[in-house]
Image 1 (tube, rainbow, N blue to C red):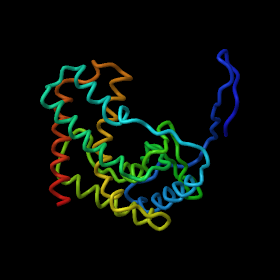
Image 2 (cartoon, rainbow, N blue to C red):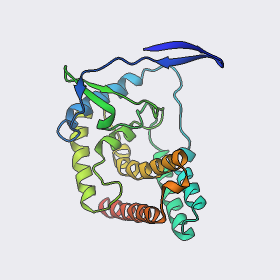
Image 3 (cartoon, rainbow, N blue to C red):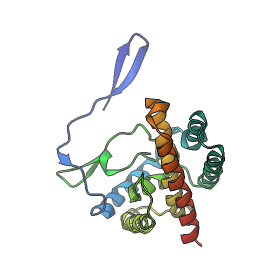
Length: 227
């Protein structure tokens, strides 16, 4: 519940949390039931009367490219990453905007004793793309090591999650196709946030090369599978 706190800088709003008895759910086994509840959440937030924050391209794409340049990463590879990021951004900005949690995974939820899912960590909540939540719950890839089987694994998990979600809310074909784009965008976003939090020294050239290869192979694989 929200509470008003007084500080030297004036009043601010705090959130008081209560303890929830439960356990972290299994995202694969419980994908359908989680999907139902997330669809209900998105429907509920359709009725939210106030304006929700929209995050700019800088937060999703551009800051990662800035980090690569600050690290003096290979200029040609950085350009390829920038071009891929621009393509991703061009596609997702055509999608419907509304509430999304923004960091939806089983580590940010608890299944309580009634079988309901209690969501945590709303720091990334925004008025951007509901399909992003579907993507992050469907992500069955390995963040650091690429292998082609991840595509089919992710699509199977997406089908299970969406089988529940679609019972209460339907996505357009473009929103469903964007699931794969959001998985790539997640790499751009997470790495830039880690670096801004911990400093440039926290990532190595080897890691940057690894991520470059991952993203380029993902782009190629998605293009091949979707045509």
